[in-house]
Length: 405
Image 1 (spheres, rainbow, N blue to C red):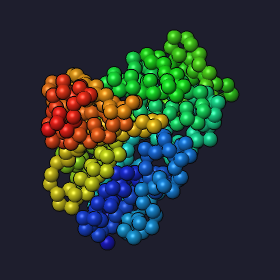
Image 2: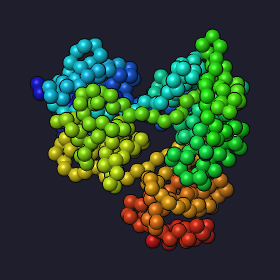
Image 3: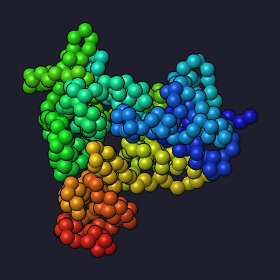
Image 4: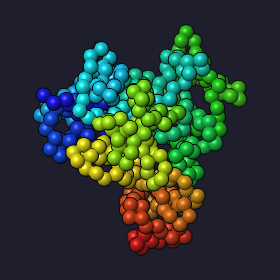
């Protein structure tokens, strides 16, 4: 029997790559290896509908277990890869066994940044939201009246704040930067979501640094801010960014720099080893890029499958993202990296708007808040390389179709 194709990391990327390999006609041995006990599942609902109880566990799974049996895909769950030997085409597992591979995809994903234990990061009641175990640990603590401190005003933190506010918790968000969403969005988008959260009773404290979390008998009781203020807290959710899981690759001698470095075809510098998803750092539009999104995990992993099956094109993503907070759906098309101006376009209905990002005259991205039409037209324009006139775009009475024609 020939050595299998091994997909390391039982998440969205590996599941997508496995399905695409079978769809393209690969009928050889195929192994999906994951360190969690659960079969591949969706991560975006964890901080939203799953943790709130709206989405049942079985609806999280990407495929039923029977599908893997039907497709002759071997799931090895609860198994951690501890070492990779590219020269021998061999993977060492946590139980000491070895697994040979013909080709491999590293889809090891990412992990949340954590607060150091010396400032209270290890206290009971302090959570991150990244995997199923995290969400299962948080859910029982989301009780009406409890005081929640959200550390970090990015999308994960704000989504968790929205869920908690709707469940009746007393929620405070602290953000070290001058404004929430500063790393990922322009000021008008920050302003929109600040007002949205404040309308639901969430307290937003920007330009606010955390000095330490404080506790009694090992359990969180509050937070001391850098200005000396002490906030009481029964629980805290830490949303201060994520780090690529590239340790396995680094220890194996693969090129790593803010993620696993890959070429246009998602190949690492080791023979027959690819990388995709949150852990992969690839060249796009002349810059090293790591996209943290479900869309990228799926598309990049499917691209790897096509390369394994004989394809030769470079990966050229068309980025899009989303976030759900309260009754607002934020849809993002493109990547706003390098923008130097924005245009705010009011939507047709109250509580809707879109923010358009430009570099010079070139349209780079659009944030659409409850404005599916703006998102659809913006995405189409970006992918076609068309840029509207900013003045016409800013006029709420102008027709988007004619502006983007």
